[in-house]
Amino acid sequence: MPLSNLAVRDIETLAHPYTNLATFRDTGPLVFERGEGVFVYDSDGKAYIEGMAGLWCTALGYNNRELVEAAVAQMRKLPFGHLFTGKSHDPAIELAERLKEISPVPASKVFFCNSGSEANDTQVKLVWYMNNALGRPKKKKIVSRLKAYHGVTIAAASLTGLPNNHRDFDLPIAGILHTNCPHHYRFAQDGESEEEFSRRLARELEELIIKEDPDTVAAFIAEPVMGAGGVLVPPKGYFPEIMKVCRKYDLYMISDEVICGFGRLGTMFGCSALGYEPHSISVAKALTSAYVPMSALTVPEAMYQAMLEESRKIGTFGHGFTYSGHPVAAAVALKALEIYARERIAEKAAQKAPQFGKRLAALGDHPLVGEARGCGLVGAVELVADKAAKRSFDAKAGVGPRAVRFAEEEGLIVRFIAGDVLSICPPLIIAPAEIDELFDRLTRAFDRTLDWAKREKLLG
Ligand SMILES: Cc1ncc(COP(=O)(O)O)c(C=O)c1O
Image (cartoon, rainbow, N blue to C red; front, side):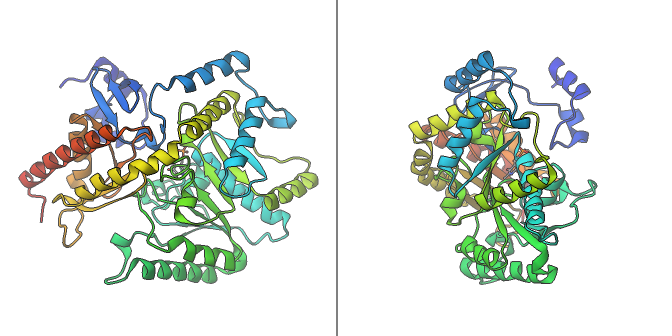
């Protein structure tokens, strides 16, 4: 099919994130025009179920009038205000108060940024700043995990444990360590139970800390369920074991709630679902249901005291973004939080999770699927060439992208992430009938992928 005029203009003008820029020149973009509920519509008017809530973020779906009106009202009143040099405004103050109230762990202050990456970069800087204030300047290394995703700015990309975010970008920076990935299906030894695997991972974390010298290791960062690394749900007992090691070596624990925050796992925050208490959380995405960019992190009292000390010594706290706490974003976030509470969005996600989980698990029987996994309203299926041997397809065969294309033809947006894994993360407002429709479309897409893979002789 010839490319549309819009597609040609796109190819000539846009550098697309997370896109094979070479093949994209032939395929062109899929251009969306509008959205309503869990549906988005392309420029030809075709409807798709947004099975990824955009990028794991539009929790309240599309065209939520209350969010739109909150933005418009704030734009009319005070479209910009900042928090530098002691300036402030109502929406930021109220949102900080609200986030402190609902934070799963004690928070003394809230710091606002614009993206998940900035929140995690800020976490790293605050850990360094705090340990300088506390007179332990050697304690600076941050431990993350292989397959973690924490963003793309220089520190956040370094924390990320995915090769494509490092390769040829000269990353990771010094002082970032990666411990092993808690994915039982891929990394457990033969016959190793989930609990045994968790204990081994905790031992390996401890060994890494000892090898590096505990006096130099400052913090540990983790997503409750790893998102972009493949929707990896930790094995039983994982976080309690890991937290023991963090406590033993006095590591500051950061929970990256950028995907899991605000109901995705059926609880308001992911750490509560998985049973651990971090020192701080990073939130973004669903904070505003992604209608406007905003992120935040919580600052515990001990860290705040250290920041005060440094600020007294240096004369200022030298960090912040022009749009930190932007009033329009804060007004939308406040409205989103009001809706989450009023509509009991997290509780309802938990009620829908068994249906979602059952349909997801059923996909595990499909001849193409090695593992179907998930938690709450997020899941993934890992496509394999040989189920028994867990053998992946050759990446060059392009099975994941092919399945995504068939899904799009069936009217469903899902995402292909590393290693022929397809992720599913619909808006939390998805109705039970829409969950069934989503999985019906996905099953048809897999059947078509299977036929194609057979024709291409890619199986076995
Ligand atoms: C867990 C997690 N942390 C951080 C980020 C980075 O957020 P952003 O793309 O807003 O910088 C993401 C993005 O997907 C994420 O999933």
